[in-house]
Amino acid sequence: MPLLFKVFVVCAIVLAAQSLFSLRDGYRFLAYLRRSLRAPRSLYNPPATVIVAVKGLDEGFERNLEQMLAQDYPDYDLVFSVASESDPAYPFLALRLRAHAPRQDCGLHEAKVVIAGYASGRGEKVNNLLAALRQRPRATPVLVFADADARMKSDWLRSLVAPLHDPAVTVSTGFRWYLPGRSGASRLRAAWDTSIATMLGDHRRNFAWGGSMAVRSADFDGMQVAERYWSASVSDDYGLTRAVRDAGGWIRFEPRCLVTSAEEIGFKNLLRWTNRQIIVTRVYAAHYWRRGLASYTLFCGTFLLGLAAILAPGLAIERPLAAAVLVSILVLGSVKARLRSRVAELIFPEEADLLQERGSCYWRWWPLVPWLMLFNLVIAGVTNRIEWRGVRYELVSPHEVRVQRQDE
Image (cartoon, rainbow, N blue to C red):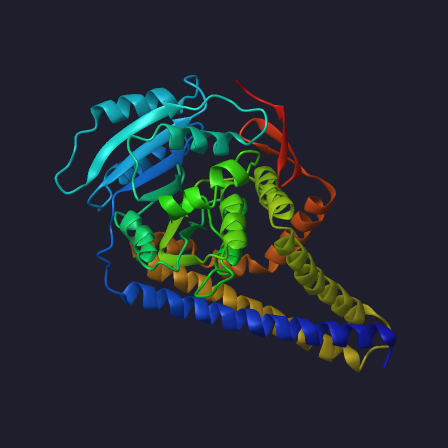
């Protein structure tokens, strides 16, 4: 047996095992989602403060704002934070919050917008969150953090806070779920990002996601998140994740708190966006980056070896076997990707028409995901510079950030 084919066979066996474990995790994720949807609504709903860092007016922001203002929750405050009055979101928010009339079916206690200013040693989003924490209307037992581009259901806040009734749970989190857009880049992003979403589940390896996370105020203060993990960081969610890990706590993933995003994107911005996600991961959670680099190098390397075996002269006997192995691995990955389509159908029934039309992108575009992910992982290995909404950052370490340019 030629050496090329021997190496391919070894890699293929390891990759097949990895693919089977990944598929098993996909079915576990789906089962966990179904259990969560069947569970009765919790009666644990203490007063909460919802903090939203804002920069610019995202696509669909007005609709998202309406949903934040009308959460089915008995008692909560809503604090928006922008860096400057010159931000176009500021006059929009100020006008809308002044015009907001309290509703009897909504427990919104107070809504306000604060000006955070700029900081030279941390990310603008994190600086906005810290300013909102200092200027919140009152102290509440629960703190909740959300993103302005997240589209939430009316029971999002209730579902996110509910797991905190268990004293063992330190942080409750959801995650974003990109709906397929019209463009190919938007559909590829949906396939790329949902492959990360399904890493979460009913286990202790979860990470917090900044667009949908809740924590008891006492735990947030006790872990010194603001002072130790956010004071010189661009990542609010990895900072909170590290704080929970250091404290020996538990991050609970709540499937009901998957929130949709639906903005369009082009391929150039897709590359920038995916690179930024992985660069931040490499700096703040290097173990995820190393694991991903090993996994996707194995996947892509095995496929290249398999193609080489198919095209190499003198391997007439081995060629059909190599082709069958590659097809089998693609099938395993596609089956898991189809599970993501099923997840979307279950958790977002209101998007049934869109998912019927475009939902196949979760598995049709999946074969490109490993190659894009490997590209992102390699780029993250050679640079620590990112750009976020007009601001450039050099991520020196998890505890040091250099702001390269600010659009004041």
